[in-house]
Image (cartoon, rainbow, N blue to C red):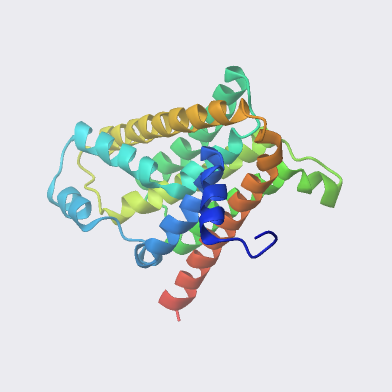
Length: 248
């Protein structure tokens, strides 16, 4: 049978032939929907939160672990990173953009927590979701077609990195972290975030390098970025809905 009414087995076989990288935006949507209640609540895991509230002083290893865990499970951060390096082929360029992103989120994360400056968790996560939408549109060339200009991608990566950092700061403030040993613990958390980011980046690059060698990369690149854009809209919609529900 051909056309739109294909047997389920044929659909599954076709889906299994999709490149690994094409599944990332789809997986993000699935994870976001499965964890919708947690995402709307914006709570850190109760075990981690209870542990952090009970300790004081310099605790480097626990905060390194928490930073790495947050980045590796932060599908919005990973999806933005996926979009940033999507069309970057040289390690020099990848290093530049990842460094700009790291500088941005490290700066606002540390300053935000140190000076106790947080942004509403729903709103900042909605902005982070929008950063995914923006990057997908940028990769598709839509911004140039719509507005006749191409924003500086390096500046955009840095600016959105600042917003991602405020998202990290908001999560840390949710831990009600002790002021005793705050600066070393914050630096340790940031080290963990960077380690998690490097691990996530390595996995993405492995998948991308394999995908780029296939004949279908150019054909599926458009679809992957559309899927990424849709995932970003899902994240934005979830956070805005959460803001309305919890502030009604």
